Image 1 (tube, helix red, strand yellow):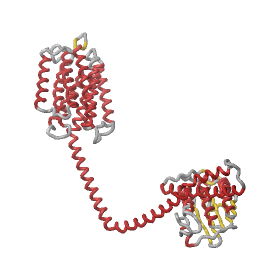
Image 2 (tube, one colour):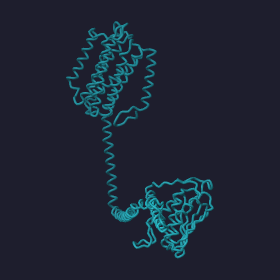
Image 3 (cartoon, one colour):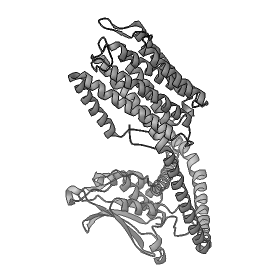
Length: 537
């Protein structure tokens, strides 16, 4: 159970702990002085029953959901309190009534239990009917007075015989009460949706605890034994559950409704005020902002649509088939091939690999923008990465008639994602090959600068115009943006290089001179075992 909530009553944890402590104290008291225990428990039950009756009767004019049920229970518990009071005075050892036997107390016990069980059954089964009509209330009063007369005139069946114990009538009555309470539980399950959640829960708990009490009262052979003690504790708990739901619905319910209505009204007023203020602000400044946003949105959508249409149509669809068929032929699975055919297939394979690199760049940039790009940094020997790049890119350079010189690096270990290092260097080499004429040269080498590894890619290409250098790492930027440009590309390769470098606590720079060539430099941190410091994520 948690705290008190709007949709249901949940006892605070300290209440549960308090109940456990009280129960433990009462048990110890009962084992030491049962008569005192019985008197205390019964008087608490009587006070609770009278509290239920008083609250229900004095708030009967308050119109609230399921009110007629609560008023009816309050009226019944008034008579339950009277019978329990008489039962307490008649209990063996009290010496109030002549004879001082357990029979009278047991008779006065069984009657209010029938009242209680019948009231719970009627409350659960007759939700749509008012049970507080004068006819019903007068009938309850007449029955109660009649039973009092029958008991004290000696016409009520014996319930306890000294030396024998409980009579058959008493035991059968207890099981009949249990049967009535079981029927009440059935109707609660059946009609539970028509009740407030808290009312449903506590009526159910009251029925269950009363059943446990009645079971205990079928097991004792002496009015002072343990079964009798446990039964009284269950009975006290049952009265408490009815009391809580009466308090909740009759006293707190209307106030909570008023409070909720007031708070909802305040929230609505505050929300409406903020909306009006925001609307006024938008009326003053919104038109200009809206125009600018529409222009930017239109341009962005146009670029994305054009870009995605090109990639989807020209690259994705045929890529899988091209790569698979090329590998099949190169493996001579379908039969031997001559040298010219092998060269042609290698050309296709290289093109497919370039296409794969392009798709990877697109996917990585999309992941980065969505915040899903992951890195797996580790201590890396740069020469291992360069060796993989040689196998991939040298055939591409040879095919274009360009010399690709990838020099071994004499550097400490680098702390970075090896796959991302390979991706960055290949992107820059691909860019260099694109802008280097046949007979030119691209050189890859590494040095140490400012405590970091500096990986240089230098070409003898046509260079980059000075006005383009500040924008060279921007997405979708190319040296020739016209539809008739001589070199293909999407403008993502260098932008991704910059992004990946910065994500790994590095950077990238470019130096270029038109007509002489360009040098790109990637800066990455050395392993922390070399330089110390924290890892990046």
